Image (tube, rainbow, N blue to C red; front, side, top):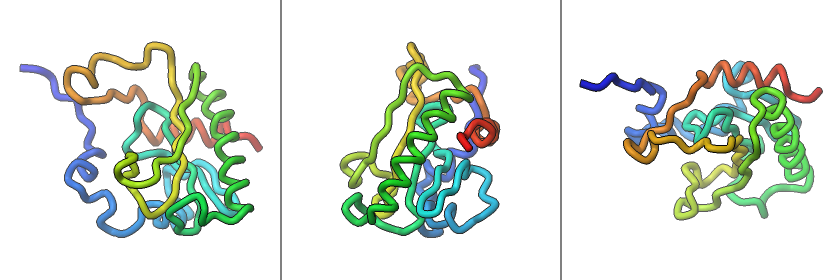
Length: 159
């Protein structure tokens, strides 16, 4: 018998209920005490991804509910870019990754889990960070709890 690998936060996603109560980005934006929001700007914010590709994976989203980059005004676009830059610096200070993936998935066919609220992924990467778990069991192992990572990033975010 093998030992179980527990990831209880993924059950909601697997069962398809992650967005049952409306837009997750609007809910996070409205909740001033949201545990996973690591930085708030005037027009956009950074939040940990509850279903990360790697440890430290976060997203930058505008407060306004828009589906595509063409719907952003200049100030929203500039602040999202600034928050992405700050996220890279905070992640570098907190976790020392070797590189990053950053991007936007527009439309479900392109990988957008939430199609109607634009968001930018910032994913830290390390040399050799692909391990055997995704290959053998379609599972990713996160070595640190998401709330601890959020705490570390808040502490390292540029002033």
